Amino acid sequence: MRGTALFGFLVAAVMFVIGCNDPKEKFGKTWYIDGAGNWGFGVVESAVGLEKAGYQGKVDSYHWSLTMNPALDQTLRFIAKGAGDRLGDIMTDYLRNNPGEDANVIALSAGTGVGIWAIENVKPPYKVNNYVMLGSSISSRYDVSRALNNMKGNIYVFYSSSDPVLGGPVKAIGTIDGTFDDSAGLIGLRGRGASSGRVINIPWNPKYERYGWVGGHTDATSEAMMQYVIAPKIFGRDLRNPGTPPAKTGNVAHGADGSPKRPV
Image (cartoon, rainbow, N blue to C red; front, side, top):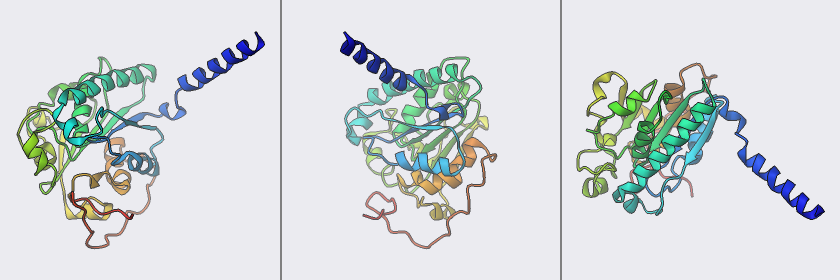
């Protein structure tokens, strides 16, 4: 009996720890959503970069892939849609349990579809704060008006006309929402809701090279981009001074997908 009681106590203690919210969630929460395959682009960089910028809230990476295969995730679109619906419920629960706190979303590539559908599925009266889309493979003509109705802030779309993935494979297999339009990550969001003043399309510019974004598909997820470019936009400029931006160092070596090569 004594052993059984001890076992029960330990199980209860573990469940209590698991059930406890991270204290950082009392200062807001940001979900980072990786692209198709969930290969880890930006997962670490988002958490580290936002923390360095002074963000005190919790940064969670939302894993949504069932296949770990980018081509399958991009074409079996029910996976992304279902994952978005589930995340919308999760965000609703967070906002309900943390009144007064903000929820933000940052997403990459096909993950931007998951992010849009999650925001659309947030239940009133709760609203997401801001949404950042990087290398988005959703249609440039996607109607974001429903998502905007569930938001307090803006949608920021970082796009590059030279993105080799969106201009190549995605052109052939279609956008994450099932069209053959140009992706938002190539030309920005141009559909219904884009003229609301709350969709901010941000084209690639050489000034971003110093932060690691050279116009490729995944490189906008760099730690420096998160710290110096993305954090001030979605959290405002009331964060502590994030430090001095890195100096521009000239040409950056590129990988096969157009992203800067990382040290091996």
